[in-house]
Length: 191
Image 1 (cartoon, rainbow, N blue to C red):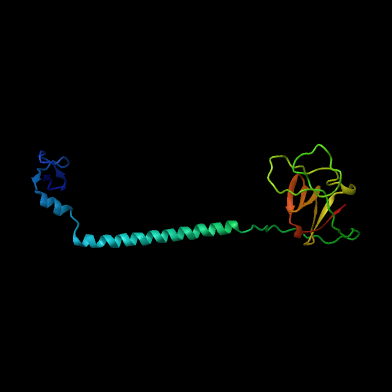
Image 2: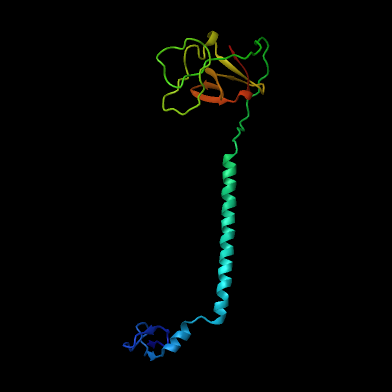
């Protein structure tokens, strides 16, 4: 084998000059090549230390990743509460006292027959690709008036239509359908 004295690159015995810097190559024996490529004692002692530090660093990074992903899962599983304040209304003189009333629920699929009675139907408990009807016989125009939802907080909501399900009280106002939990609703009256 031959070696370049400038760049220390190894060449076969057939080459005379270095391909990189064009200096004359010198002949070396195999023992010099082995000595140059063999790790020293200090390098051998350093290898386990570097491996241990790398392992500890990997465990530390994994622990941080695990903690962050766990925290993200916990916050996404926590129930979301609405922070929208509800309007507070003062009682008006001459207004009848609110009494709870039951109105029919919309069906999950369109029906060709009108409902025979005003009893509540099954609640929205499954996903469906069918359209959900928010109107029906007697919905939103009971006793010729518009429904008003009296809230537990003292506020009121004027709605176009109102119906109860096992999930809560649904109402439609200006084409937007909204759900109120049972605890938020005190009564439903008509004007």
